[in-house]
Image (tube, rainbow, N blue to C red):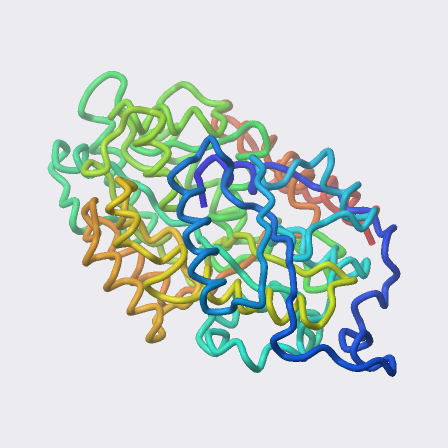
Length: 459
């Protein structure tokens, strides 16, 4: 996933109305072939529209899409794919209207955070009866597939999955006398490394953190999950972050900010601020996914060779996100079958489609970042890792500890009403980072009350 799209994913709250197709719209996917009319032949012509084709201003990836369509249609000559290009792939202001009005593509692109709302409002087809022919699914991570499930029914397939880790500047680690090949494993390690980096001189920041624009609450969630905490109760009706794990998140930041002086004096940072600091070569560590390294390289003048990513310290769970495709509730069985064939070809097969690293290298695109984790440590997952290494244009060993950590960590999605809760927790994060006398217990208690009000309105 492009870093910009990742930022949009984690910062755009998309409200989906329950209006539109009825709640049973996708409940009988075989209706079209069981209505008494003769079922179409297996090789009958079928056309499917597919969202999120790379736009023309991204010519290399657009050309790859076209090449994959041609290769797919050679294998399936009865299928015609019509890609719909747009950037960004989802526009919050129009997405809800298109969805409610039934104007989406046969295969429409979605963020993980919207899937359950789409299912609940009957705006996607149940594709469960057609999955037996998608052989790749047996190896997709169960925690990833659960995103598209409701009960025992499946409503979509993933395209991209990421989880957060610890991004660090290997060059600064070396300058500070730290081993860049042995990144921090615990928060105590992070504290110690941050102090040494900050001691390099004026302007050096050991560890950077967000606290504005909903990004503070987002990173609070990532740190909380890593410690085994929960953002909301199991039923999603009350906040659960006012806990020992939540307190530990803020106490750790308070220590690094005011006792260790390893976080710098400039606070109230937003998404682009830490990217800029990392690109300048003055920031040692931050929470982020591998996409951060790509964004720092492409936009903020960093160099791939200078950075690494490792797993979240002490983490048993990691904040996860991503995107995928769902099917229009009025898609025919033939369109669903053809669409599933396309999704498996393009997004779920090592060595082809989005995992054709040999082509990406030939096209001059960076290869080596572990920025899509759909298969974990299964055979396809291992094959993808091997291909990344074989055709790498950046040092894959800089990210191996992140890959190793993700093989065992459990992925956790963002909480319900994520953006509203993140905004509330921005206040707690900013208070700890700007006021030495900030009362952590009071901050969490106040945030809990406000979050409960938000969750009560959505239940």
